[in-house]
Length: 242
Image 1 (tube, rainbow, N blue to C red):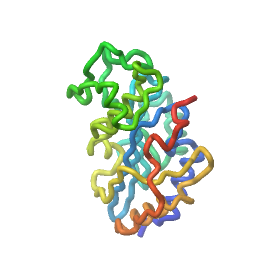
Image 2: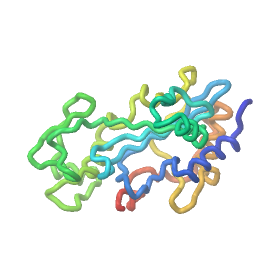
Image 3: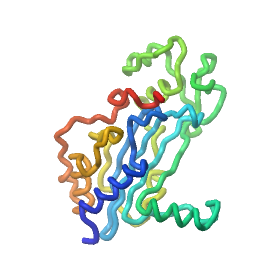
Image 4: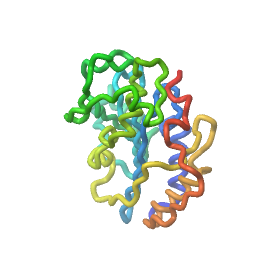
């Protein structure tokens, strides 16, 4: 076996140290939705974590696709960097992790800074029209609007994450940095995520210890969580508040 669980966990821990492992209470991103998938071949492994949310600094909701792998696929070419030295430095410091961003919600009149425009009734998600919810529909999904009748963009994102999977990555997008010959072996809509901001590491997490064993063996039975899921945005109230 060309890899073991300790090696996988050490890679994830190093990504925490360089702030490239997902922090669900990232102060700059209002968390709305998550997804995790594992991939494997005889010689390689990969883990993909998606985080859908809204950063006012970015201006448009996005899904951040974090890929961690023994071997990454389709990395940006050196020509996309300011210099060959910059490329070499990035590859040297990020040998097993990559980030991609997708924007499932189209720009349009619905977006009014950090608010959803009150006069707009529809938005476009992946070229499909989606009716904006009434104020009462937010409450039905556990979302208490902070400044009603106005709806903040992050509140809309949380509604959409609960209402449609279209805001997360497609199977093709999930594999953007995954070797083509690898097989998906596990999908998780929820799990117990370490509190990275407060110093918890993947190697100390029951979840990621078990996921590493799944990657090593290819046997999903190693994932037997005893801790409750905490990836729902309600569990990370500080997300986006900086």
